Image 1: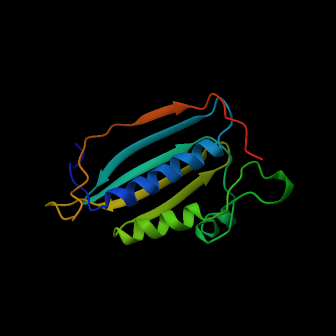
Image 2 (image 1 turned 60 degrees about the vertical axis):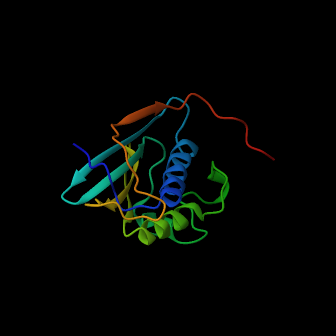
Image 3 (image 1 turned 180 degrees about the horizontal axis):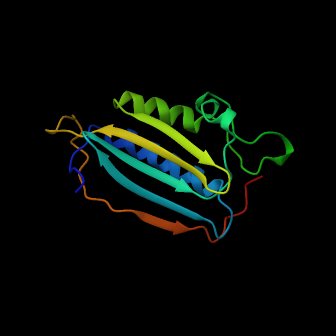
Length: 148
């Protein structure tokens, strides 16, 4: 059973999760799979966003959290963006006392994990994050055309 309260600020948590899901959609081909799930390890709740899109090269796994760095570069780059989303997401995770990590493997895509401390009592001026969540998945059916 998952905890009903974690140490998080609602807007920060929302921004991190929206960014991770948007990236998964951006880097997953039509017909690909994106899934979200949670699990608890001791007093830490892990929220996972996984896709079977492009894999991130091992030498880029930490670099993608630096400002203006992207996994794809040059003319082969498929997605638009500034390279700031993962930087901001990691900083927001750390501001909430958590971590944001990534694992990626050839043929498997990538999994981003947001880890947050389980709260034993509500602590936020905006209220605790409550809820019971189970794994969800989505299939990418298509994309809207990129804006010029």
